[in-house]
Image: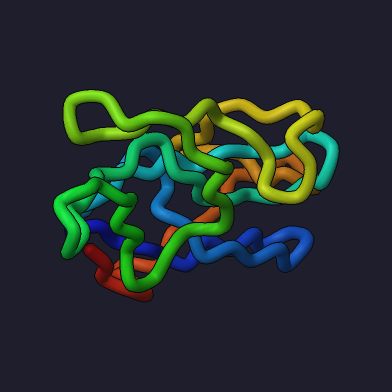
Length: 122
């Protein structure tokens, strides 16, 4: 079961609801990324599990509460489809993985994590 936390910057008041790194649920895996062009943190899918459809073909099974981005899918391999890290606003933006403790994407101060998860998801 994945968890989403509230991260806040005490200096510039930036707030983000993200996992804070790599996280996974039953049917998907996500990674928190920092977009250097948007100056935002996002949770993006890295892998999604396929699910059998009623006619016996396979289709992607999306989580109930999806993270910010799910790019278009190709053929699934071994029950999972992998996705490259990309900004949900524009795939041309410069992104990199972000892990807690990490710096604010706007001012560079360290972000504070709320002690309790904001949301549990599968």
